[in-house]
Length: 128
Image 1: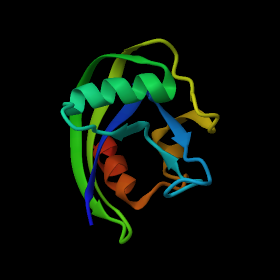
Image 2: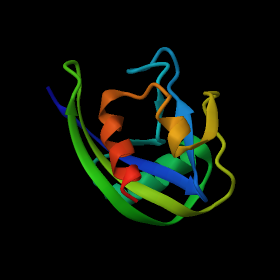
Image 3: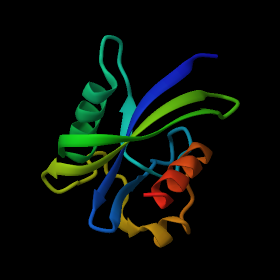
Image 4: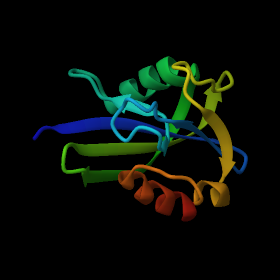
């Protein structure tokens, strides 16, 4: 089974975090997630994060800070998530694929349904 390498952005503004909901027909469909996507061949994680956040939520990442790296096995898919805090960006995040979106406080995020690998992201955010 191949490992899917993913760059993930924890988009933060004040005490709120921007999330999108996975489309129903995708892996882990219907669950909330931090935006991001696959690192392509020949691309750095930073380049992937910048490209994916521009494509997915139309923001321009000005700077980011590494938060945590997570490896998780879903059984049908293995993922390596490299997660960054993105609190310096241009434009207002707006989901580009028609999915639900929203700004949530940390306590509100604890009530949402996330893919299992994201539980470690929430734990890392709590320590900020």
